[in-house]
Length: 137
Image (cartoon, rainbow, N blue to C red):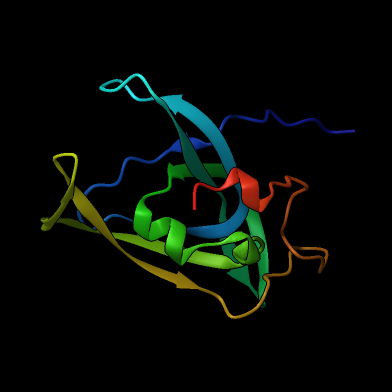
């Protein structure tokens, strides 16, 4: 049996025009203490598998990446998108819309119409299960 090292997903902090793409494999929810208020708030993290599409099948490279959910990303991506090929492009900040002194981050999000099959033909999803109660909306 061949073993490969499993590394933590690469954390993406988007810069203007940056685009990431791959198969959405997990949505994770956790609590983080707000540094300004000291209150806990729910955070959503999206995890993607990187890879290429060949003959309509997803061939993962073994690399994963993740990024935190913003108000827009949480609206645009959902649990139903797990196993779909997605592209997320950061468009920049909109200084006309602010909350707590922070400008709103704008994204373009594209999702494949159908689940993406992996090399063996099975959909590319993992067993991570979170419920609606875990999401902050």
